[in-house]
Image 1 (tube, helix red, strand yellow):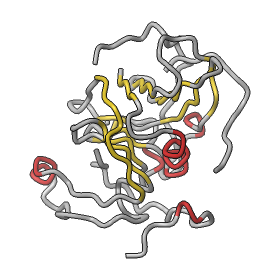
Image 2: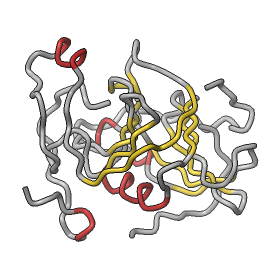
Image 3: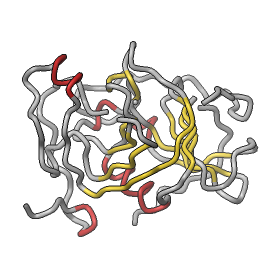
Image 4: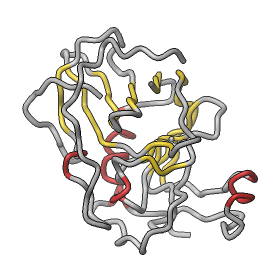
Length: 209
């Protein structure tokens, strides 16, 4: 597992892709763990304002401002909790030493924003994707089902939130991280969602603000 830790800094800080940019490069297969299968109330008091991050980036390029880092945390959430600040486009995994691991995320586009607290109820590696009926109605060209793999919009890993249709998942569109483009799911780069997936388990508390 790659170690993204960086020097501490102070910090602030939704379903599948709905934009269709040019095809993304295939997911790196240099690590066996990254191979596809063969076949609630808002509480921002704990979040100090983060520097304003520009989401502008060259098409098909990941904006490095959203790369993982370790930041200071002095809020009320317990270690192991995930806090997602949708305005800042950052996900924080609270750690036990007064810090949080911070990852850039993509969030719900206008009209698909949401907030609340759930727990991770299921985890899946290279998950298959079954677009819900309402999404297929909006986008008639979507398949009824897509097997897991590097071309799947859910990416390398998925963590399902409560009984909702929302997930924290990977993406085959890394350039969309830091933008509001999804139907409500929280998307991450594949390498970042793999790292987070290995750090949390079913039952993890997820607070979206």
